[in-house]
Length: 287
Image (tube, rainbow, N blue to C red):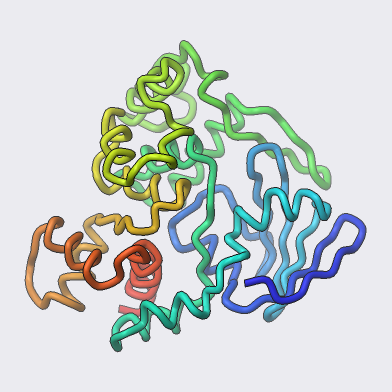
């Protein structure tokens, strides 16, 4: 939750608790923020290059102004949510208390639906360094170049700009078998077979069904898209890792994804997505 903001020319300084850049950018929800040095990140969101630097609870935003901060970044970084209250609400037992204490600086971003969709299609059976490289090649090949401090950055290509793309066109990004899934997504979104930017207005189950129409999107990828770009916070994305962690820490036995989903809904209700992120980050780094 916003504590105190000071405005300077081309810089905004935010005093806030429960926000850690490293935890937020490196918890697996986004792939186009890069650490320049410790506590110092640069990322590109739509056509905005943002530079951020953190010391303690002070976070500096560079290359922005008051209008963009209020219109874009407050929403993108979920700055109006009281994460202290959220953590207190979901930390009813010792496992989640340990997870939230370890990763309390994580904030769930509100990313662009299209970029998130393509990012998580590429993420399937992949690792974060390789995902980042594929997305950077994809943006450099098909996006628009921007310059900041003498460095080149590239916007994420829109579905409209990718109309008619072929697997041959995608060879350079080295996405492998996922190329055909990217092409299917381009086609279905451009032809309004999936009304991507309206899905956030649907009930979560209906929005999930629409996403599953696109090749390469299964339940886990769909839930990641819903959680990280559409504010569907009841989603609890279940991959191999989170399944093993939930089984080990809570069930003490093997169980089905359906059992895990029901458990998350009962335990954390509309905040299951937040719980998943804390649990994922904690288990990946501490267990």
